[in-house]
Amino acid sequence: MKIFPDCLPCHIRQVERVLDRLQMPAKETFLIYQKVFQALSDCPSDITPVELAAIVYTEVERLTGIQDPYEQEKELSNKVAFQILSHLRETMSFSEQPLAFFALMAVVANQIDCGAFQVDLSQLQRRFVETLQNSRFRLDRFEGFEKKLRGAKTLLYLLDNAGEVVFDLYFMQNIKKQYPQIKISAAYRSEPMINDVTERDLRSVEPALKKGIDLFNSGSPYPGILFPEVSELFKNRFEHADLILSKGQGNLEGLFDRRKPNLYFGLMVKCRSISTLLGIPVGALVFSNFAD
Image 1: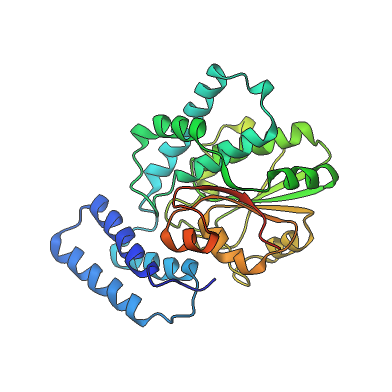
Image 2: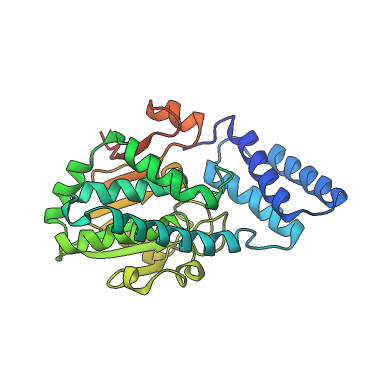
């Protein structure tokens, strides 16, 4: 998927959010904006949104010397997400919920995205519960996904953001309960990029949620999956998995052109361009396969 024109102002807004939270001196902030504008003006028009994000954030890292500006937010996101999950367990009868409900929870959690939003973790529980109660998948092929689960032996799950990963892992644990024959592996980012989940971020996740899940490094330093910029292990698992679930808009942007029958996407639509591409509103929830 190639960049859209509004990818450029979107990434400028992302830089603004990073610099606002870093509270750097005005002179340094001005210089960083200049360098980012230059990098944007020099980038080719045929790159993907994922590559554009990598250009912008790499430039910000180079100029600020800060590799992981969202480190604290990611750790807190995991804690808040687990608090929300515990609250939902206490207030809802989870044993009566179908697997589709846990899939919906995982996609609702895709709103924990510091690239797309100014995430207010103090309000996350309220927003999460409201979205969960009032939303359904606008593009919904979960039934087809679950049919494929019944005959699958392997599932590759592509992780996206910290915080969100708590609900991803809970969804995977429920898949394992219903389909114990499936071996599940889940891929995380190789380097810090926005608030995407890395190996370090996974350390603060409850051990019980990770039990039985093969968590591995995708080799991707981008906020999405781009071939061939991934590890050989990832390529092998991607090509041979019976079923693949790709979480988040960044992974959609990187993999949309590699559509195949066993590849599903779960995300919240974050921008006008993806809204137009998929034919649904910004903020809509997706669990779909685009192979046909």
